[in-house]
Length: 241
Image (tube, rainbow, N blue to C red; front, side, top):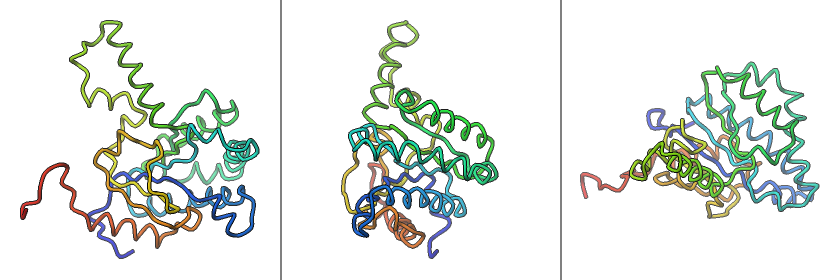
């Protein structure tokens, strides 16, 4: 890659969009797009890990995706279980730490057990922290955080004056993560779709027309070069302005 290794984002998030359209373009069922997209999670995570990027957070299934056709939802909920059974030795032997964020009360007990086992087996890994967002929505995350903080106030454990941005961050699913540096969305859609709304406060945004199954090392390089071309001011100004 023709990128500056000294100016890499520490934390990248990706909205994996376009699996269905990728399949439709090839006259394939939508599930084939999801299958190809699932393998691409592995490939892009591996590239980020080799680059030394520390955190990669991927939007896999949103709180709104339950509205999709039942057969498609069933495929999306069962595929991770099948893949894990087939590739678990590779997952255990990788250097990546894998975590899941999102609701866990609406997924099957089998999928929940798989997620928990993956987290346990990889918790001591020292490579890329790969986070897969499953049944995740930022509205839900922020509502949960507000309820937790309101409970602390109600129980007289904190005062209202103690509520700060830092306290709110401590109650998010990403409380132990570094600030988000770069958001990538594939497939040509230019919106955030209820994803990491708080965390996106000062992140750089990158949108590409490339469908997720086609998002490869070259496309990642384009996103990183775009990121490296920007001047991050965090509300301030450059010295020459």
